[in-house]
Structures are given as structure tokens and as C-alpha cells.
Length: 248
Image (cartoon, rainbow, N blue to C red; front, top):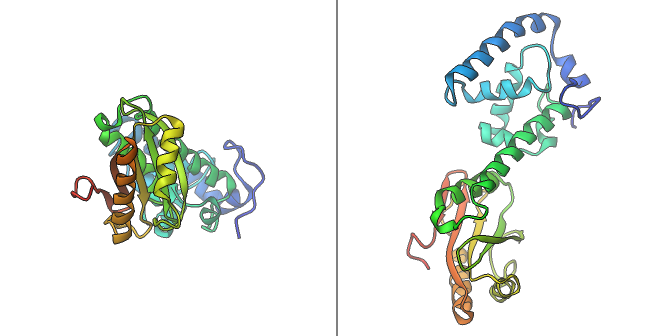
């Protein structure tokens, strides 16, 4: 069950989080926090290990004491820093020492990361900002635990005009209908589109169903003058472009 808590306010440590910090830990943690802060400010992006980044983020919710055990427990539970930040808040709270305040603090970082990544692609030609697009899709989808299908609809200058969440589940014609994809393109005035989905297994390699639905959407688009630029599959192990593989 999630840990009980007194407040959502990042400035107030929850009852469960406060109980996890001993009096001796409060004193020992003060100097460590100051040293960690100095390393962060002077050393840049690579100054801290992943668990130390989590330690620092947890300072916002746990005002005193040693957050290292909590940070390491989160890494162990979810596998990586990205895994922690993309975890379900209720699952986070099953880790000893994590209450709703800590979970909210960590989720706010994940939200900020997504917003930053999205800002790099809005109002820009996506084909000329390909790495920024991949960064955005990876940040947003690589750690999902369900398979999610999205269609990015583009105008004549290849700028994003609609990021449509088609649905969750395996990518086949039961979940995504080629004619509906193209019909929406006509409705929003799109000239082109990029199909996107994730593989929760981690590997982004396309399945036979991935290739088949891609080819059907490409053909439906050709009949009505809507170009399928690509089908991008993302996973924890990377991403795959079906166009780069010669499958479109």
C-alpha cells in the first residue's frame, strides 16, 4: 500500500518520510547535502551518479537526513534513474521512505523533462529536427509499461499540428484502422504523418504486424495525397525507424 502522508507541499516532509529519517541521520546528512550541492553546481551534468541525482531530488521532499538509502532503493526497484522518474507514483510509494510528497517531487521532474523535450519540436519542421523528435518520443514513451500508439500529423512544412493518441494495445488493425488514420489527417488539414509506438519489452525491433500496418497506412495515404514519412518504434533499448530499414 502507498505510504501515508500529511501534505502534497514539497516543502513539508510527510509523516512516513520524516519517520524514516533518524535523529543521527539528520546531523550526518547536513554536511553530505552541502557537499552534494557543491558538486552539482561546480561539476555539471556528469558530477553526480544516478542515485546521487535522486538523492538531491529527494531533498525537496525530505528536508533533513540521509536520502541515499531511499535513492538506492528506488534505483534497485526500478532499474535506472529514468525508470524511477517514469514509474507509477503508487509503485514509488511502496519503497520504504517514499511518501506522496517524494513521489510528487520526482514526477514533477519527469513532467518538466517531457515539457522541455516537446518545446524543442513545437513549431519546427520535424524532419529537420529529427534528433529532437527522437529525444521527445524516448522521454515520453520508452518507459511505458503498456504499448501505446500515436500519430503525429504534420502540415505542408512538416510542422506538428496534431499529436494524436490513438490508443493502447498491440498495433494491429483491431487497434488502429488505416482509413481512420488518413481520415483524421484530412480533418486536421495534415499533408503528412509519422506513426509512433513503443515496445514495453524494451527492444524496438519491428514485428511482422508493425510492418504490415505501416505498409497499409502508407498505401491508404498515397491514394489521398497524405505522406507517411516514417514509423518510429521506441523502447528502453533505443529506437527504430522503419523508413531507415527500407520497410516503407
